[in-house]
Amino acid sequence: MKDIKPADRVNCISEYYFSKKLKEVAALNAQGKNIISLGIGSPDMPPSENTIKALKAEAEKKNTHGYQSYVGIPELRKAFAAWYKKWFGVELNPDNEIQPLIGSKEGILHVSMTFLNKGDGVLVPNPGYPTYLSVSRLLEADVKIYDLDENNGWQPDFEKLEAMDLSNVKLMWVNYPNMPTGTPATKELFKKLVDFGKRHGIIICNDNPYSFICNEGEKLSLLATEGAKDICIEMNSMSKSHNMAGWRMAMLASNKQFIEWILRVKSNVDSGMFRPLQIAAAEALLNNDEEWHKQYNVELYKRRRVLANKILDTLGCTYSKNQIGMFAWGKIPEKYASSAELADDVLYNANVFITPGFIFGSNGERYVRISLCCTEEKLEEALERIKNRKTR
Image (cartoon, rainbow, N blue to C red; front, side, top):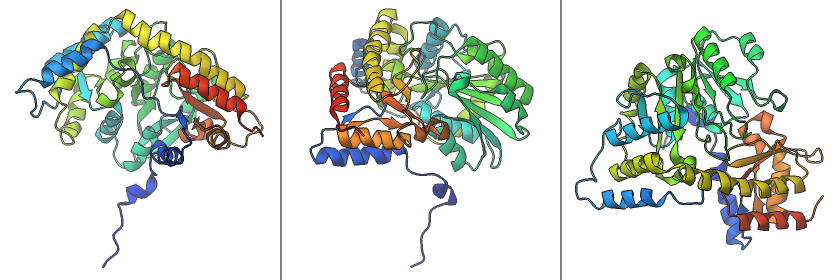
Protein backbone atom coordinates (compact mmCIF):
# COMPACT_ATOMS: atom_id res chain seq x y z
CA MET A 1 0.00 0.00 0.00
CA LYS A 2 1.30 3.44 -0.90
CA ASP A 3 2.22 5.61 2.08
CA ILE A 4 -0.39 8.19 3.03
CA LYS A 5 0.94 11.55 4.14
CA PRO A 6 -0.89 14.67 5.32
CA ALA A 7 -0.72 17.99 3.52
CA ASP A 8 2.47 19.94 4.12
CA ARG A 9 0.54 22.52 6.13
CA VAL A 10 -0.11 19.91 8.83
CA ASN A 11 3.63 19.62 9.43
CA CYS A 12 4.01 23.35 10.03
CA ILE A 13 1.85 23.31 13.15
CA SER A 14 1.53 21.12 16.22
CA GLU A 15 -1.42 20.05 18.32
CA TYR A 16 -2.71 22.93 20.44
CA TYR A 17 -0.80 23.06 23.74
CA PHE A 18 -3.89 22.75 25.93
CA SER A 19 -5.16 19.85 23.86
CA LYS A 20 -1.96 17.95 24.67
CA LYS A 21 -1.43 19.10 28.24
CA LEU A 22 -4.98 18.42 29.37
CA LYS A 23 -4.51 14.79 28.30
CA GLU A 24 -1.59 14.63 30.73
CA VAL A 25 -3.68 16.29 33.44
CA ALA A 26 -6.46 13.76 32.81
CA ALA A 27 -3.97 10.91 33.16
CA LEU A 28 -2.71 12.34 36.47
CA ASN A 29 -6.29 12.64 37.69
CA ALA A 30 -6.85 9.01 36.75
CA GLN A 31 -3.96 8.20 39.11
CA GLY A 32 -5.82 10.02 41.88
CA LYS A 33 -3.76 13.23 41.83
CA ASN A 34 -6.82 15.55 41.89
CA ILE A 35 -5.16 18.30 39.85
CA ILE A 36 -6.45 21.85 40.36
CA SER A 37 -6.49 23.37 36.90
CA LEU A 38 -5.62 27.05 36.65
CA GLY A 39 -4.84 26.81 32.97
CA ILE A 40 -7.71 27.59 30.59
CA GLY A 41 -9.83 30.74 30.71
CA SER A 42 -13.23 29.05 30.66
CA PRO A 43 -15.70 30.88 32.94
CA ASP A 44 -17.06 28.61 35.65
CA MET A 45 -20.24 30.63 36.28
CA PRO A 46 -23.44 30.26 34.21
CA PRO A 47 -25.02 32.81 31.88
CA SER A 48 -27.72 35.06 33.31
CA GLU A 49 -31.02 33.45 34.30
CA ASN A 50 -32.91 35.29 31.55
CA THR A 51 -30.44 33.98 28.98
CA ILE A 52 -31.13 30.37 29.98
CA LYS A 53 -34.89 30.98 29.99
CA ALA A 54 -34.72 32.45 26.48
CA LEU A 55 -32.76 29.43 25.24
CA LYS A 56 -35.27 26.98 26.72
CA ALA A 57 -38.31 28.83 25.42
CA GLU A 58 -36.98 29.05 21.88
CA ALA A 59 -35.72 25.46 21.84
CA GLU A 60 -39.20 24.19 22.77
CA LYS A 61 -40.71 25.64 19.60
CA LYS A 62 -41.29 23.14 16.82
CA ASN A 63 -40.14 25.37 13.98
CA THR A 64 -36.80 26.55 15.33
CA HIS A 65 -34.44 23.65 14.62
CA GLY A 66 -33.60 24.09 10.95
CA TYR A 67 -30.66 25.69 9.17
CA GLN A 68 -30.20 29.36 9.87
CA SER A 69 -28.98 32.33 7.86
CA TYR A 70 -25.25 32.64 7.27
CA VAL A 71 -25.37 36.26 8.40
CA GLY A 72 -27.14 35.53 11.69
CA ILE A 73 -30.74 36.34 12.56
CA PRO A 74 -31.73 40.04 12.59
CA GLU A 75 -32.47 39.92 16.33
CA LEU A 76 -28.87 38.95 17.09
CA ARG A 77 -27.27 41.45 14.72
CA LYS A 78 -29.43 44.25 16.12
CA ALA A 79 -28.54 43.19 19.67
CA PHE A 80 -24.81 43.25 18.88
CA ALA A 81 -25.24 46.74 17.37
CA ALA A 82 -27.11 47.97 20.47
CA TRP A 83 -24.46 46.42 22.72
CA TYR A 84 -21.64 48.17 20.87
CA LYS A 85 -23.49 51.47 21.05
CA LYS A 86 -24.23 51.16 24.77
CA TRP A 87 -20.86 49.95 26.03
CA PHE A 88 -18.33 51.14 23.42
CA GLY A 89 -20.05 54.17 21.90
CA VAL A 90 -19.69 52.70 18.41
CA GLU A 91 -22.41 52.99 15.77
CA LEU A 92 -22.71 49.84 13.65
CA ASN A 93 -25.20 49.07 10.91
CA PRO A 94 -26.65 45.68 11.90
CA ASP A 95 -27.49 44.91 8.27
CA ASN A 96 -24.00 45.06 6.82
CA GLU A 97 -21.31 45.95 9.40
CA ILE A 98 -21.69 42.99 11.78
CA GLN A 99 -21.02 39.30 11.18
CA PRO A 100 -21.89 36.80 13.95
CA LEU A 101 -19.34 34.01 14.39
CA ILE A 102 -19.25 30.52 15.87
CA GLY A 103 -16.62 31.73 18.33
CA SER A 104 -13.94 34.30 17.63
CA LYS A 105 -11.34 31.53 17.09
CA GLU A 106 -13.32 30.75 13.93
CA GLY A 107 -13.12 34.42 13.03
CA ILE A 108 -9.32 34.35 13.04
CA LEU A 109 -9.43 31.72 10.32
CA HIS A 110 -12.11 33.51 8.27
CA VAL A 111 -10.33 36.87 8.38
CA SER A 112 -7.02 35.26 7.45
CA MET A 113 -8.53 33.28 4.57
CA THR A 114 -10.27 36.41 3.30
CA PHE A 115 -7.23 38.67 3.13
CA LEU A 116 -4.09 36.52 2.96
CA ASN A 117 -2.74 34.85 -0.15
CA LYS A 118 0.17 32.46 0.06
CA GLY A 119 3.27 34.52 0.85
CA ASP A 120 1.40 37.63 2.01
CA GLY A 121 2.80 39.21 5.14
CA VAL A 122 0.98 39.12 8.47
CA LEU A 123 2.13 40.81 11.67
CA VAL A 124 1.75 38.53 14.70
CA PRO A 125 2.45 39.61 18.31
CA ASN A 126 4.99 37.90 20.59
CA PRO A 127 3.67 37.06 23.15
CA GLY A 128 0.22 36.51 21.71
CA TYR A 129 -2.68 34.12 21.32
CA PRO A 130 -1.16 31.04 19.60
CA THR A 131 -3.96 30.76 17.02
CA TYR A 132 -2.82 33.95 15.25
CA LEU A 133 0.43 32.19 14.42
CA SER A 134 -0.91 28.72 13.69
CA VAL A 135 -3.64 29.93 11.31
CA SER A 136 -1.16 32.14 9.47
CA ARG A 137 1.14 29.16 9.01
CA LEU A 138 -1.71 26.95 7.83
CA LEU A 139 -2.39 29.49 5.08
CA GLU A 140 1.33 29.66 4.19
CA ALA A 141 1.48 33.37 4.90
CA ASP A 142 4.74 35.20 5.50
CA VAL A 143 4.66 35.53 9.29
CA LYS A 144 6.38 38.63 10.62
CA ILE A 145 6.69 38.55 14.39
CA TYR A 146 6.56 41.86 16.25
CA ASP A 147 7.68 42.12 19.84
CA LEU A 148 5.66 43.07 22.87
CA ASP A 149 7.90 43.84 25.82
CA GLU A 150 7.20 44.53 29.47
CA ASN A 151 9.58 47.51 29.36
CA ASN A 152 7.36 49.06 26.68
CA GLY A 153 4.14 48.36 28.58
CA TRP A 154 3.41 45.30 26.41
CA GLN A 155 2.52 47.60 23.51
CA PRO A 156 3.87 47.50 19.96
CA ASP A 157 7.09 49.41 19.41
CA PHE A 158 6.06 51.55 16.45
CA GLU A 159 9.61 52.68 15.70
CA LYS A 160 10.63 49.05 15.23
CA LEU A 161 7.51 48.35 13.19
CA GLU A 162 8.27 51.27 10.87
CA ALA A 163 11.81 49.93 10.39
CA MET A 164 10.53 46.54 9.20
CA ASP A 165 9.99 45.63 5.55
CA LEU A 166 6.23 46.04 5.35
CA SER A 167 5.95 45.92 1.57
CA ASN A 168 3.96 42.66 1.48
CA VAL A 169 2.12 42.98 4.81
CA LYS A 170 -1.67 42.92 4.52
CA LEU A 171 -2.85 42.10 8.05
CA MET A 172 -1.83 42.85 11.65
CA TRP A 173 -3.20 41.01 14.68
CA VAL A 174 -3.60 42.98 17.90
CA ASN A 175 -5.37 42.05 21.13
CA TYR A 176 -6.29 44.76 23.64
CA PRO A 177 -7.14 44.37 26.43
CA ASN A 178 -4.22 42.00 26.01
CA MET A 179 -4.00 38.30 26.62
CA PRO A 180 -1.80 36.93 28.15
CA THR A 181 -0.34 40.07 29.78
CA GLY A 182 -3.53 41.76 31.04
CA THR A 183 -2.49 45.10 29.55
CA PRO A 184 -5.48 47.46 29.21
CA ALA A 185 -6.43 49.12 25.94
CA THR A 186 -5.84 52.86 25.57
CA LYS A 187 -7.26 55.41 23.17
CA GLU A 188 -3.74 56.59 22.34
CA LEU A 189 -2.66 53.09 21.32
CA PHE A 190 -5.73 52.65 19.13
CA LYS A 191 -5.07 55.98 17.39
CA LYS A 192 -1.50 54.88 16.63
CA LEU A 193 -2.73 51.57 15.24
CA VAL A 194 -5.30 53.19 12.94
CA ASP A 195 -2.70 55.65 11.67
CA PHE A 196 -0.18 52.86 11.12
CA GLY A 197 -2.71 50.73 9.24
CA LYS A 198 -3.85 53.56 6.99
CA ARG A 199 -0.37 54.74 6.06
CA HIS A 200 0.79 51.25 5.12
CA GLY A 201 -2.45 49.77 3.79
CA ILE A 202 -2.45 47.12 6.54
CA ILE A 203 -5.71 45.79 7.96
CA ILE A 204 -5.63 46.01 11.76
CA CYS A 205 -7.68 43.28 13.44
CA ASN A 206 -8.26 43.73 17.17
CA ASP A 207 -9.37 40.69 19.14
CA ASN A 208 -11.39 42.19 22.01
CA PRO A 209 -13.04 39.62 24.34
CA TYR A 210 -11.71 40.91 27.69
CA SER A 211 -13.03 44.48 27.98
CA PHE A 212 -15.49 43.64 30.77
CA ILE A 213 -13.32 41.38 32.92
CA CYS A 214 -11.82 42.99 36.03
CA ASN A 215 -12.30 46.35 34.32
CA GLU A 216 -13.96 49.10 36.34
CA GLY A 217 -12.99 51.75 33.81
CA GLU A 218 -14.21 52.65 30.34
CA LYS A 219 -14.73 49.85 27.83
CA LEU A 220 -12.72 50.67 24.71
CA SER A 221 -13.14 49.54 21.13
CA LEU A 222 -10.68 50.08 18.30
CA LEU A 223 -13.68 50.97 16.12
CA ALA A 224 -14.41 54.03 18.28
CA THR A 225 -11.24 55.62 16.88
CA GLU A 226 -11.83 58.12 14.08
CA GLY A 227 -11.43 56.48 10.68
CA ALA A 228 -10.95 53.00 12.17
CA LYS A 229 -13.78 51.37 10.27
CA ASP A 230 -12.00 52.11 6.96
CA ILE A 231 -9.03 49.86 7.73
CA CYS A 232 -9.88 47.91 10.90
CA ILE A 233 -11.80 44.83 11.98
CA GLU A 234 -12.76 44.07 15.56
CA MET A 235 -13.74 40.70 16.89
CA ASN A 236 -15.66 40.30 20.12
CA SER A 237 -16.95 37.30 22.02
CA MET A 238 -19.61 36.46 24.59
CA SER A 239 -17.49 33.61 25.96
CA LYS A 240 -15.88 35.67 28.70
CA SER A 241 -18.16 38.69 29.12
CA HIS A 242 -21.39 36.69 29.39
CA ASN A 243 -20.17 33.31 30.77
CA MET A 244 -21.00 31.60 27.47
CA ALA A 245 -17.71 29.95 26.39
CA GLY A 246 -19.31 26.68 25.32
CA TRP A 247 -22.03 28.46 23.37
CA ARG A 248 -19.53 29.71 20.75
CA MET A 249 -21.22 33.08 20.27
CA ALA A 250 -19.06 35.85 18.84
CA MET A 251 -18.97 38.50 16.15
CA LEU A 252 -16.79 40.72 14.06
CA ALA A 253 -17.47 44.26 12.93
CA SER A 254 -16.00 46.41 10.19
CA ASN A 255 -16.98 48.24 7.04
CA LYS A 256 -19.54 46.87 4.60
CA GLN A 257 -16.97 45.74 2.03
CA PHE A 258 -14.83 43.79 4.51
CA ILE A 259 -17.91 42.09 5.92
CA GLU A 260 -19.07 41.11 2.44
CA TRP A 261 -15.71 39.55 1.59
CA ILE A 262 -15.50 37.67 4.90
CA LEU A 263 -19.04 36.32 4.37
CA ARG A 264 -17.94 34.80 1.05
CA VAL A 265 -15.48 32.64 2.99
CA LYS A 266 -17.67 31.93 6.00
CA SER A 267 -20.73 30.90 3.97
CA ASN A 268 -18.67 28.14 2.38
CA VAL A 269 -17.54 26.77 5.74
CA ASP A 270 -20.59 26.54 8.02
CA SER A 271 -24.38 26.60 7.89
CA GLY A 272 -25.27 29.14 10.54
CA MET A 273 -25.86 28.93 14.29
CA PHE A 274 -28.70 27.22 16.17
CA ARG A 275 -31.55 29.76 16.38
CA PRO A 276 -32.27 29.29 20.12
CA LEU A 277 -28.60 30.10 20.85
CA GLN A 278 -28.91 33.29 18.82
CA ILE A 279 -32.15 34.33 20.52
CA ALA A 280 -30.65 33.69 23.96
CA ALA A 281 -27.47 35.57 23.05
CA ALA A 282 -29.56 38.57 21.99
CA GLU A 283 -31.32 38.43 25.35
CA ALA A 284 -27.98 38.49 27.17
CA LEU A 285 -26.61 41.35 25.08
CA LEU A 286 -29.67 43.52 25.64
CA ASN A 287 -30.54 42.72 29.24
CA ASN A 288 -27.39 41.83 31.18
CA ASP A 289 -27.26 45.19 32.92
CA GLU A 290 -24.49 47.07 34.72
CA GLU A 291 -25.24 45.33 38.00
CA TRP A 292 -24.93 41.89 36.41
CA HIS A 293 -21.61 42.80 34.77
CA LYS A 294 -20.33 44.31 38.02
CA GLN A 295 -21.17 41.15 39.96
CA TYR A 296 -19.93 38.54 37.49
CA ASN A 297 -17.22 40.34 35.51
CA VAL A 298 -15.68 42.67 38.08
CA GLU A 299 -16.27 41.82 41.73
CA LEU A 300 -15.99 38.05 41.27
CA TYR A 301 -12.70 38.24 39.39
CA LYS A 302 -11.28 40.94 41.66
CA ARG A 303 -11.61 38.59 44.64
CA ARG A 304 -10.05 35.77 42.69
CA ARG A 305 -7.21 37.97 41.44
CA VAL A 306 -6.17 38.68 45.04
CA LEU A 307 -5.66 34.95 45.55
CA ALA A 308 -3.95 34.44 42.20
CA ASN A 309 -1.54 37.25 43.04
CA LYS A 310 -0.77 35.50 46.34
CA ILE A 311 0.12 32.40 44.33
CA LEU A 312 2.44 34.49 42.18
CA ASP A 313 3.98 35.95 45.34
CA THR A 314 4.54 32.46 46.73
CA LEU A 315 6.24 31.43 43.50
CA GLY A 316 8.52 34.47 43.71
CA CYS A 317 7.02 36.06 40.60
CA THR A 318 6.74 39.78 39.91
CA TYR A 319 3.69 41.26 38.21
CA SER A 320 1.69 44.39 37.45
CA LYS A 321 -1.25 45.14 39.73
CA ASN A 322 -3.06 46.94 36.90
CA GLN A 323 -3.92 43.84 34.86
CA ILE A 324 -7.44 43.29 33.56
CA GLY A 325 -8.95 40.17 32.04
CA MET A 326 -9.31 36.73 33.55
CA PHE A 327 -5.65 35.82 34.01
CA ALA A 328 -2.77 36.76 36.28
CA TRP A 329 0.53 37.11 34.40
CA GLY A 330 3.77 37.00 36.35
CA LYS A 331 7.51 37.02 35.65
CA ILE A 332 9.28 33.98 37.08
CA PRO A 333 12.32 34.15 39.39
CA GLU A 334 15.81 33.63 38.02
CA LYS A 335 16.27 30.27 39.74
CA TYR A 336 14.03 28.65 37.14
CA ALA A 337 15.55 28.02 33.73
CA SER A 338 12.21 28.36 31.97
CA SER A 339 8.49 28.84 32.45
CA ALA A 340 7.99 25.17 31.62
CA GLU A 341 10.27 24.18 34.49
CA LEU A 342 8.25 26.23 36.98
CA ALA A 343 4.92 25.00 35.60
CA ASP A 344 6.07 21.38 35.85
CA ASP A 345 7.36 21.97 39.39
CA VAL A 346 3.90 23.19 40.40
CA LEU A 347 2.10 20.41 38.50
CA TYR A 348 4.14 17.48 39.78
CA ASN A 349 4.91 18.72 43.29
CA ALA A 350 1.70 20.59 44.13
CA ASN A 351 -0.85 19.01 41.78
CA VAL A 352 -1.74 22.43 40.36
CA PHE A 353 -1.75 23.17 36.64
CA ILE A 354 -0.66 26.67 35.54
CA THR A 355 0.27 27.79 32.05
CA PRO A 356 3.91 28.36 31.07
CA GLY A 357 4.32 31.58 29.12
CA PHE A 358 6.45 30.07 26.36
CA ILE A 359 3.30 28.84 24.60
CA PHE A 360 2.51 32.48 23.74
CA GLY A 361 5.88 33.06 22.10
CA SER A 362 9.52 33.48 23.04
CA ASN A 363 8.83 36.77 24.84
CA GLY A 364 6.63 34.81 27.24
CA GLU A 365 9.40 32.38 28.18
CA ARG A 366 10.10 34.05 31.55
CA TYR A 367 6.42 34.27 32.56
CA VAL A 368 3.55 32.11 33.77
CA ARG A 369 -0.20 32.62 33.52
CA ILE A 370 -2.83 31.73 36.12
CA SER A 371 -6.51 31.48 35.17
CA LEU A 372 -9.07 33.15 37.43
CA CYS A 373 -11.79 30.77 36.22
CA CYS A 374 -11.78 28.79 39.42
CA THR A 375 -13.63 29.15 42.70
CA GLU A 376 -12.05 31.05 45.56
CA GLU A 377 -12.02 27.82 47.57
CA LYS A 378 -10.01 26.06 44.86
CA LEU A 379 -7.64 29.01 44.51
CA GLU A 380 -7.07 28.97 48.28
CA GLU A 381 -6.42 25.23 48.15
CA ALA A 382 -4.02 25.71 45.23
CA LEU A 383 -2.21 28.40 47.22
CA GLU A 384 -1.78 26.08 50.21
CA ARG A 385 -0.60 23.20 48.01
CA ILE A 386 2.01 25.43 46.39
CA LYS A 387 3.16 26.79 49.75
CA ASN A 388 3.57 23.25 51.10
CA ARG A 389 5.23 21.64 48.10
CA LYS A 390 8.83 20.54 48.26
CA THR A 391 10.72 23.61 47.02
CA ARG A 392 14.02 23.67 45.22
